[in-house]
Image 1 (cartoon, protein in one colour):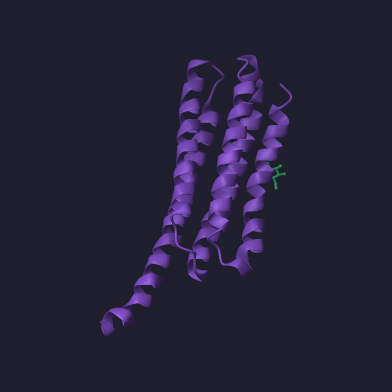
Image 2 (tube, rainbow, N blue to C red):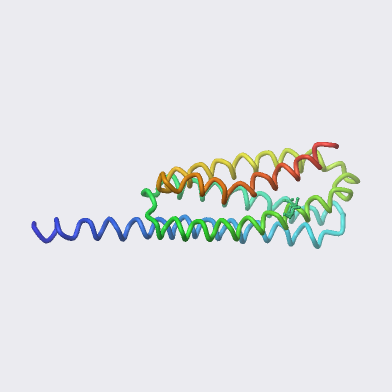
Length: 171
Ligand SMILES: *[C@@H]1O[C@H](CO)[C@@H](O)[C@H](O)[C@H]1NC(C)=O
């Protein structure tokens, strides 16, 4: 009984660490899915059939982000180390989101030709909302005194979506 009481805080610390790693893992998966979408967009020649992998990667990314939101929602509050792991994973994702959305912006003339730009716009809106939901779910688990910093770290992702949406809303 006494031993259990003594060990309880240790078990709690271990689970908090595991959750920081679970969220960082979800962010790493999001990073991979984002990079795959960027690669599909970059190598696309502009043909209709070739657009299918882009749609597939884009759907895959949306699913990954929604899973990440669930992971964050089911997580215990993060400790300092967990927060650090999550911040690190977020910074990596920020760069990948920038390159993938830059690739998407560069491909707009091709999407215009196929009259697919409105679809891309709607997809970007969905993706932006899903990403905001994931950010909110993660920030809710960050210690309160680090939440402002966490918002600063994640802000460039929302800014990237605004840049891309601005370009695509001129269809
Ligand atoms: C990517 O980052 C550069 C440099 O910060 C910025 O000028 C550009 O607008 C960003 N593009 C997107 C799509 O986020």
